[in-house]
Structures are given as C-alpha cells and as structure tokens.
Image (cartoon, rainbow, N blue to C red; front, side, top):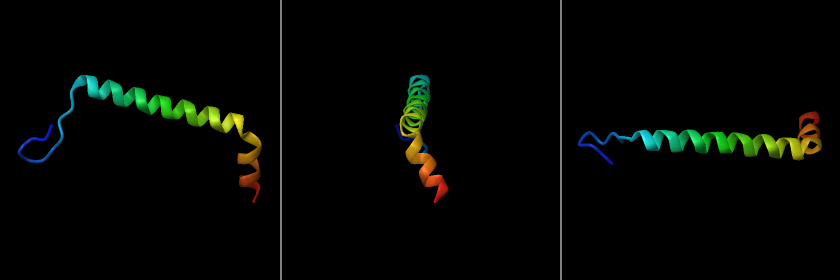
Length: 46
C-alpha cells in the first residue's frame, strides 16, 4: 500500500515473509557454493 507521501507500509506478515525469503536465498546460495566448491575455488585462483 502507498500512503499519500508515497512511502510503502508493510504489515508484520510482510516483514516475516521478507525474513523468510532472505533466509531461503542465503541457504540456497550456501548450498550452491558447497555443491560447486571446486568451481568457486578455481575462480578465486584466477
């Protein structure tokens, strides 16, 4: 929802959902790094 000033208001549910999304992205990225460790290590060495 937008207020008259154009600022977005969020509900407590929106805040919780955003926290969950951030945690999922963090976990998926960590799992991807672990699964592809040799690729990441090779890129760091270049």
